[in-house]
Length: 313
Image 1 (cartoon, rainbow, N blue to C red):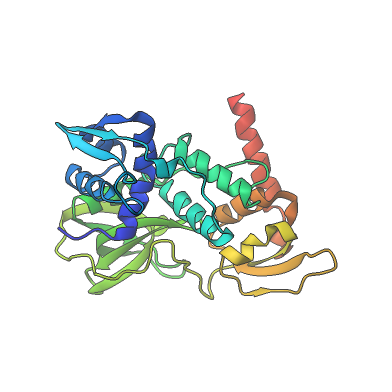
Image 2: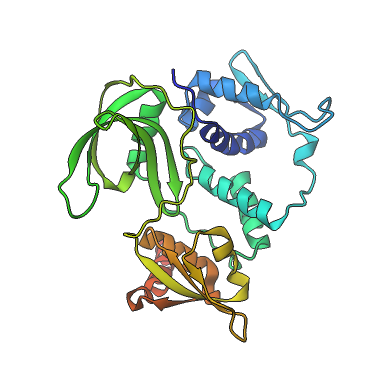
């Protein structure tokens, strides 16, 4: 069986551990089913967690043990102490946590979600407390299952708008979300090498057998920014409290601050949905300068969100 990337294991543990700590005692089978992970992989990951802690380690280990099919988890003291994070550390933790929240089984009302909300508020990224969550595409679950079972799949893939879709044989290694889009790193049987595919360009997927290739020792880190010359750009005018945009995301250029501290930032937009979430989080701390067609994105997204609340009410 191929070795799972460390980043994949870490992200899954980020959502499993808070969920377990809120419950204290859960069966192995229930956890494996909820988080779409194999029992053997789950046990290996939890055994690894039980060896993590702070020096001198004697009473600072994460308390996890498995007995007769049940998982028992205690809350170690290191999790009850307030953290003093630098801004960079906080952004890194926020990014990793949000990526983990996209995995199957993540609890949108659980401890991790609440903690991420507090970090975002502390960074000034989300003054309204609004969290915009896009539904996870069904194909994510299908590919995750194929990865878990080490299966080869046949997909019909639209590589760009200018060419016809093609059939590809893939052996997926990892599925991840990056800046509003879903991707998979997979072995492309026809190309005989590692390739990255956008999931929204996969028109169909069929499992056709077992995978034959092992995951490479080194793969691009999940969460890498896939920006190139073909991706649309947008120019934003950003207030001082929104400066985390150009500290967190790769940008083409940033202007000098004006008299009020506002700057113009030009960056890649991988999807309209990603831009919607960005503009909603920033509120009145951002304005769309160019292209003019993007100036209605925030108002349209806000109207849609309010419509959802009115329906629920």
